[in-house]
Length: 103
Image (cartoon, rainbow, N blue to C red):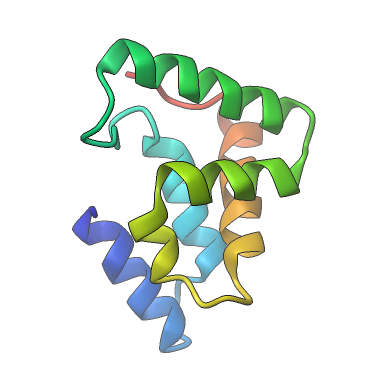
């Protein structure tokens, strides 16, 4: 798990300046670099394309499901009432960058 994600979630849990939505936005901006150890880069690129499709459809439920499937350790530290905020943050990153970063 990236230390920046853990730190952002800790700050959100302390009601600091950053929220779980911000953690999701940062994750959306870096999703191409946060490759699970179980996947090769080419496999990951295909999975990110699936996430892009969910973002294009603005389907928060599918974005959340995708995050839970691909980043279970990260999502485990997110309180049970906050995964929607993380998913919304990923969608915000998609909207702002007109896509999700793969490089």
